[in-house]
Length: 388
Image (tube, rainbow, N blue to C red):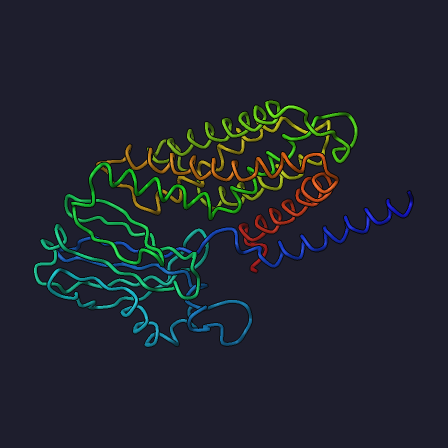
């Protein structure tokens, strides 16, 4: 009996060490890297702007020459010529008859919520460029895809009488910037896909949700959470899951809408650390046992915060002003579909394992502790205390 207890404890601490090592080693992997491409007009000429995180540029050019773990603007400027060639090769704009020449490059640094970006502006030399965009202007983006297959370019179009957005990926590096791509059905379907994609790459959102679902398959008692018995009826677990998912959906839909319609606009400097803290709170709540807060209530309160995070992404995508409700509805539906897919994958896994020691010790205890550690690391990173 004693040897079994010792073996269980040894396995538990081994699990903790492995999970903490994995989470610390992947602490930066809470979201994909994004670049921002903007097309606008200035004095009847098209202006193309690209904002790329210096951290991403460093992956290509090894900018950190002194190996101090930080990329300075001086180190970036030292490779301006190489960066210019790389940018003009990786970002191309063309009409049906010709490739547009990028002229008068202007390079500067700009602050974003997730760090310093390399910002580049060009004037676009195309014959009849302002008129041609309405039917045959094509943007192609090939930067960073070889280094990061999760990388995305968020394209915002702000041209005369036409605002739209797109998301470019390794599988879809090109977009036709014509008004024909701005129909209600196309805008809706595009934002549905972007909503699904965002929830799937948003590891912080996923871990917050899963933390709230872990205990749905155990019956609460006054004993330690690792001694809670498995639920006997699937209906009990399903209703618990539905309560959490419904509360989370309702909450983030509220703040997503309020932010998009500019009724509330909290800073990303506050929202991103708050999302990380919500992950910590949800995970640690699992370890409180009988004293734990109701999980659907946590889902609602922190879901409000996550809604602000979704809104920040949607704003970065660039909403078409003439189809704001369509884009908002599509994105929110996409988030829900992505969320449902995650829940449907987790449900049968948890149901089959709910009787096992593995589920209580590894999934509930080890999993919650590991998620809490990861959430703390994200919080420290997003507040600037940690730089790795």
